[in-house]
Amino acid sequence: MPLITAPAVTPPDTGGGGSTPVPLPEIGYAVATYTDPTGRVWPLTDEEVGWFTLADGVSGLGAATYSLTSDAHPRGGARLRYAQPQPRAIVWPLYVYGESHNEFIGRWRSLATAFTRTLRDGPGWLEIARPDGGRRRIAVHYQDGFEGRGSKGYGIVSDYVAITLWCEDPYWIDPTDVVVHRETGSLTPFFVPYPTVSSSQVLGATTVVNPGDVIVWPTWTVTGPASLITFTHEGTGEQFTLDPTAVGHGNLLAGQQVTISTDPPSVRYQNGDNWVGSLDWPSAVLWGLSPGDNSVTFQLNGSGPGSAVDLAFNSRYETA
Image 1: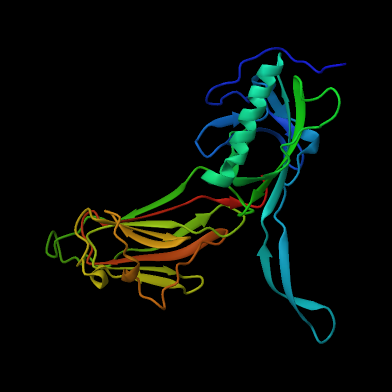
Image 2: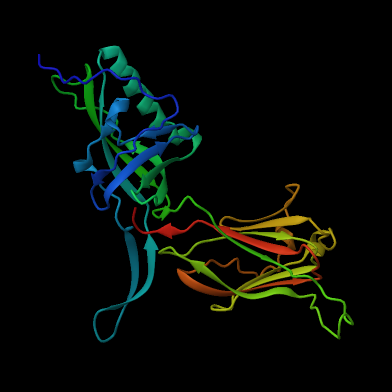
């Protein structure tokens, strides 16, 4: 019986390797890794670890699929009303091998567990790294495909799988955070050295750039002192206001912090208390940032030295 064999190597305990870019369909030369829910990193494009990607079968790395809702037009055709991005399916073929049956089956079982545990422990992350250092990743759940060829000559010291990974969010993200920091300047005494006005409403208008392809939903961290905090998107007119007194706390003191998440919506004080009631519902809109330049205004009433707003998000992209 002919067998497919390969040099004996020991797979890494925590990942690594995968340093040589390989050509992948739809995106060109890249290095791929998979991080399972436990945080272990599995290189997917390094032949020396005992498994590697069969690039010819990779698919699902391009633009997201959309479901279009339209209205018939009286003069013919239709008008697009809404485009809904759909979950993404990625097919990732792997070749697994070993010098002996025990070595092969150990790698086979470990890989199967690494992918299927996403159905119990939360998503894993498929990451594509470019030769220029750029990286994009996507959260994945195992769907099917870890079965093997089931034909003569396979399953002894080597076999193939074609894993289907399901992605509830079809967009790829840059794992490097984009952070915008705005802080009040020094307040000036009115008569020193000449009559000067220092506003208690600080930070003001600014431009936030979203370098990605699609809208992002940022997280805000507000540092006191502040009595009332208002965030306005000047392009859409959407805004929300946080009032610390609405939850019985009183004004934010110097150094006290509140974190506002826009997706999923949440407001947490620094000790973990739920402050969602501090927002000006029902008019509050926890707005996102469109691709490109966004004109926004951060307004902190009752501000002073140390008052600051930090905005953080990860850029999102259509393709890997």
